[in-house]
Length: 147
Image (cartoon, rainbow, N blue to C red):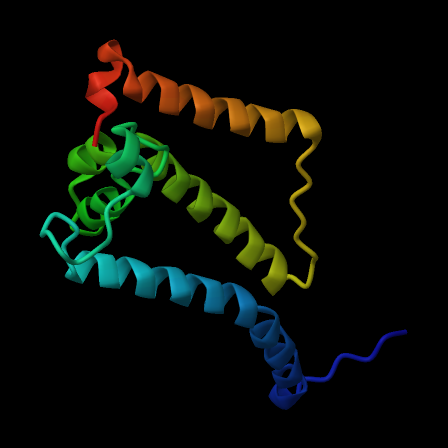
């Protein structure tokens, strides 16, 4: 038969390991929040704050990341329409990050390992999505995807 103590201090040591397990997810989230706070404060629409995209500058071709800083700036200020207009793929990435980070934090708090196993098909699918996004935004009918 298992003995159950009514002593409240017997439950206290369980909190320490849970907090330690959340240290890395909290650190990652803190870094992301700091980066978004910086981009939200230092406007990328003002010239001279950030370097220009080298691919755009040299070739005139929008890379998949072009408009990402403007997208993050608009997202921080709650302007989702402008964020999507600047870089829709980046906004989708913000959502994916939020879901993956939440799952990671919940699993870490419960003491479970979190592992994302992407197979070859998944990686090729992500690559194709990025290439198609880049191609479409550089074609005349994809002008709505220009930053």
